[in-house]
Picture (cartoon, rainbow, N blue to C red):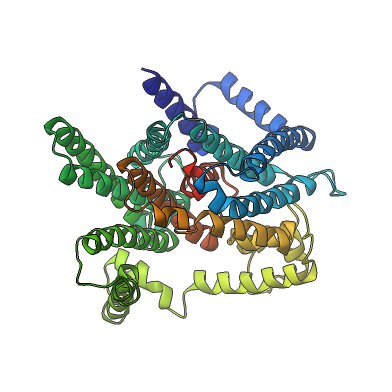
Length: 476
């Protein structure tokens, strides 16, 4: 009963966060309610109220930072003794990044700047840390695993249902006569990125349930796992259609890399199981000459190369869209390259502290934008460069470093417990699924603006924390 209530509350909270675009733009037909929404929106957008929001969120971030540092700096178990240095470093990197976000909201001389981006990022960080704390406080590994499983299921349900929402009043984005799907979000690229993450979550959960069907001997558990497998298969098909119809190349690339990581993790586990029962094959040969991830990567690169030269002039729209990346006349690619050059010029002019919130686009428009670009909005198409231009290169480095440490594939503790309990193995699978979805977001954030949108930053930070090694507290 408690789990059902917790699941319902999580579904409601994540539903509201993921539906911010839809709730703001959806016409209700009620004049008084539309006036109320406009009044609330103008109040929230005022600089004074935004600074108050930043102050409240900074307080939460400081509290989580102190809790994490205290936990990481006092190793008590085997896992903590092995990994506490890395956890301290990751918390320091996140703390420095958050400090840059907050300080730039108060130290700018212009009082009329918009700090919505800072608020959105801080909300994502706070929710991610809250989810991580909720998992850590569970009394045992099984309860912690259920918390993570429920959150992944909530995201899978919401993203699969969003495929069926296609409001007619959204602005349309056509591609060669076909309307790109965008779901309850205003941008098809955002929709595609969320669909890519959803496909990765559904595939990983489906593989996990398939393993349970094969490994368990109890009839009831087999039936339950088979029903769950059917649900994940249905959700995966729905989101795959949405991903295809979004015509978002960045989302396709992110989904491909996320699936590659996911498949490599499952193949590595299969090879480990086979190796444990095979006495003839030595460890070094298996480890150095038969790495599944390398084989899968080589196979995919070969298929992509053959596909490009075979189908680059095809009239099939999804294939044509995918291979248009290699077209030297592609306007979108040219615009991004010019914008990347401008972003690096901006970062080189103010490398340490950046230009502050809401300033890079204005400076780029006035000083760096070439005449062949009709607007300076292209400068915002890379979230990592946006962080470097806004907060400075050190803050960008801290953000990238925190992502890398959170996605660290394995630790000595995990290697030492490969043959440990079923609960620990299942928890490692859940973390691998979360990491695969984070990879989708990381690729998407490089190619389009998403980190500063509530519907994308919340699942990104939540999955980043659930996929990190620090989320394994209590699973030993």
